[in-house]
Amino acid sequence: MLFVLIAVVGGLLIGWALGGSLSRLETARLRYVPVLLLAVALQVAAAFALGGWAYAAVLVVSLLLALGWLAFNGRLAGRLLLAVGLAANALVIVANGAMPVELSAAARAGVATGPLYDDPRHAVADGSTRLALLDDRIPLPLPWQPQVLSAGDVLVAAGAGLMVAQAMRRRVRGQGAVLPPPPGGPAVSTGVPPPPPGRPQMRSD
Image (cartoon, rainbow, N blue to C red; front, side, top):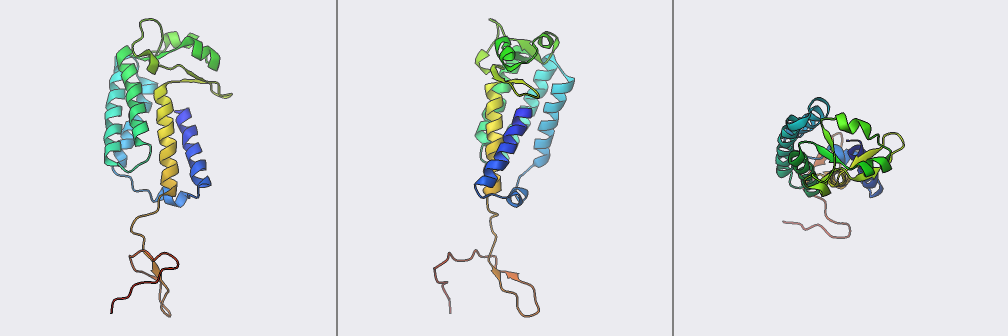
């Protein structure tokens, strides 16, 4: 989760650097937001309260909800990265009953390996690990909280950052030109986009 938050902050900075604004992010039209919030809540609850096959089952439900939300918001950038990343994490967890962690990667990141043996949500990767290429094997030695990431984690973070950056740059559709206010009155929107600079406006008499 921490790495995803870092990617979202990176997306905000990239969107701002490319001329985006937070106001456009606020007007992004997202459908079925409660479905996304429920998927996130299940992920958090499973990470802190469950273990073993119950943990895997809740993650699958959360994945299905997230994929459904992405399907109903088809114009979002990064949605394919998010979908593939979430699916990859769910697959390796379901295949092993927990997320396998490579001990060598944990050591390089500075993560204590002892607690892994007692953590029901993680397992030590070994020769019997299924779908080993999708397990936690990418060391991230953050100074305040070192982590070991999976390929799915990287895809999810990239998709989230790309989604935020694109939403900051997207113009609100249907925004029309604003006519000068009449004497003593407010400005009136025509509902029609203004013509490009330098082109005369067509008249119909």
